[in-house]
Image 1 (cartoon, rainbow, N blue to C red):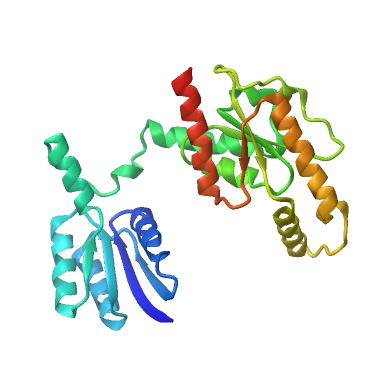
Image 2 (cartoon, rainbow, N blue to C red; image 1 turned 90 degrees about the vertical axis):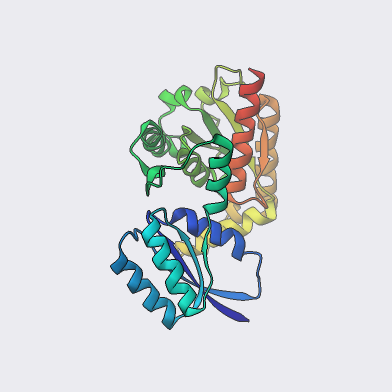
Length: 275
């Protein structure tokens, strides 16, 4: 297996360059990547420190920097070391600049300004925490999205991901032998109501996830919670409820949290377009 060092440099938090690098590197399965993260880089002294590290562990340098002097220092230093230095946002910013007919402002960290969108995300995050696992039923109607499903169908992490996109998401678990809350059953996905979505998962995969969860809490007893036939009946009953209520169903068996959230956002956009 080939090992490669990748230096990720940013004048802000580094989230953008890290995500772009990850999206590219997953295409190279036989490569072991050693990441070196360098956030909040804005001075020549910081650049010199990075260049020293690059000389010790040569590899690809990816950066999102807007200050011209800092960029030139990185480019010159990497050229002298004989390693590639790539400004990953340049082609995108250039395309926008040409299309819009104006120059970019070249201000680091503008995506993290404390604007209205930022505070909406914070509010949505707090909402998700207050409405996790069936909490806050009295205020369920304030949700943009309500996720429901049996245990371990990724309801909570999906809600938190949606919250980071400014979407108020709550989740209500389906527990065998326990009726669903009346507050949830009143919603039939009318345009002025929260969008209720049922999450489901392949029973065999669900059993595996549940077993892993029990091992984490040092619980090894065999119960209906991990019995395949019982879990299959549990999943089928939940799916029948989704169909009866007219709620969209998303199978999360082979989906990441991000993919599930993307599908939910598509449902939201489709309903808004129709409404």
